Length: 236
Ligand SMILES: C[S@@+](CC[C@H](N)C(=O)[O-])C[C@H]1O[C@@H](n2cnc3c(N)ncnc32)[C@H](O)[C@@H]1O
Image 1 (cartoon, helix red, strand yellow):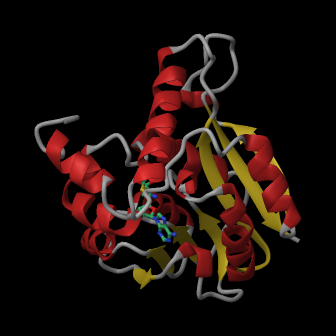
Image 2 (cartoon, helix red, strand yellow):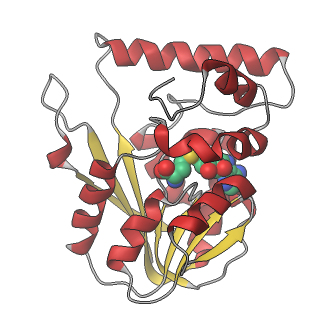
């Protein structure tokens, strides 16, 4: 699937029938050859937007996977950068790509950091958290940041209802809901639970001041709205 180096359909099915953690352990060696890894264009646009916002010493990539967000942090942070993820397999791949970085294996719903970072990023992972889990996740990131620290989240904006991708992602969510109703352990991954307004509300509720900016270089939907935005949540 996806490319000659990507996972086979059978491998993807086995992964999707596992827990999230185990699924990513299995997918890790081939993850960078799937569309699930945040594309370099999004990482470059995020880096560019953040370089206009400030300068940073210590950076944290939440749900770092194989290290996509570490690319952003390594360009922007003058000092230590740290990736956190609960998949040992994904962390092993990330460590190979960024041997000088720090790595922590932990559940993002119980982040083990206190006021250690100026910048946190998270890309491509929020669909793995149920809406009711987000306050705990965001409170952990808030606690991990120093006062004035920034949490940056690049997100794709919803495609129009008339587009193929809208219905593909709706179909994906429906399939996962049926899968999770009949199969244990659950594999939580939904595209349509992470609207900008819901994320904004949850971030604000735990103490962030939230703005967002269009990543204009990444294109527009047919109606003219940007395909990607960058959420900027500042710890007061
Ligand atoms: C789609 S991948 C994204 C990886 C990377 N951030 C990127 O943009 O390519 C989602 C990552 O989130 C991690 N993840 C999901 N739920 C998690 C949790 N509760 N705690 C820690 N990591 C989690 C997975 O292990 C996986 O590495």
